[in-house]
Length: 444
Image (cartoon, rainbow, N blue to C red; front, top):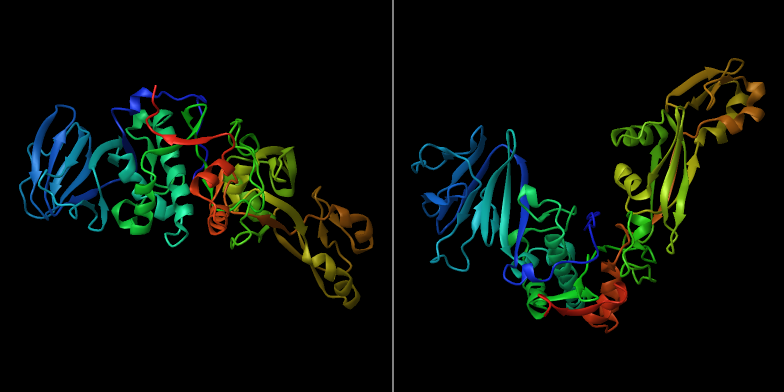
């Protein structure tokens, strides 16, 4: 799940959701064409005018593309195209009331969605597709994508409450309203797969917790969740830049996670390139270390990277994403395998390979300069003892624990607690400190 949702306030409006429980999810973005059909057919309404501009026949698709005036419609199956063929939009696609429960709007021939679909011009030359549906139907498509549906029912129920809470919180605090949606369908928000993702076991968990959310002081919470913490969840301020009173670190029960411990190794050249792609330019990186504040789990809020052009501190979560790490509960171990073989190479009078600050291998003969230092200097064999501390590590091993940002509910921990007989309410109230499970909307 869930990367950082920018929090504008700890409080949330209560009343606006009471009469409108619809969630708007961006299921496609940046597309140059979108093909949609339905076994029941569908109508197309141009929201700029409020008029129905066309009706697609059952089973036949229409294709949508960006146009200078908004959205263009072209036929891919022989049916007439509404005139003039392009509209200001956004365009809303809805099935008729006669559609049966097993008939859904279908995108690209395979992806099926409940509710309505909205095609809108996202930018010049690109379309976005928004799925609008009730919170409960939305959570149907989230739970089995975020947690294995064969896990214990109480774990699935806890996931349903967390997903529903996060969705409602996101709707009330959305920064994407101007873009036409509340969430996206990836782990930028929480993973949503539409009808194709649904599973009867997960659906039962959603139904059995209908309308239930996690509340702190009567307000629905930002219910962050992750796969596994690596033994201890974390306070929100260590991972993001804000403190939430209900996101506090607690001992976890995720030892059965396949990512409870893990290792990754990178050359310094790979680290340099990955950070530069994220705008962190310190030259050729030769050192990574912890910085900032250490959290209750052992995570650090920041990492300090030093290179040939200077030093920069970046948030550990940004480093995680730049390098594709599983979590930020990590330790750095510099590696330079050729140091161990230098004495043998020297003794045999052969070539020696040294790795410089740029990650480039320099092969030299004994008797000539053989090692490139952090300062850019070349060191002779008789200087090796003095120069060894200046040699640039060839790579760095990162030893880690956990999978995800480590905030809020741990899915593998929830699995263990459910196996131990804990209820979904127990699980929610353990991982979100000081909360209660109640109904949404909250009574005034």
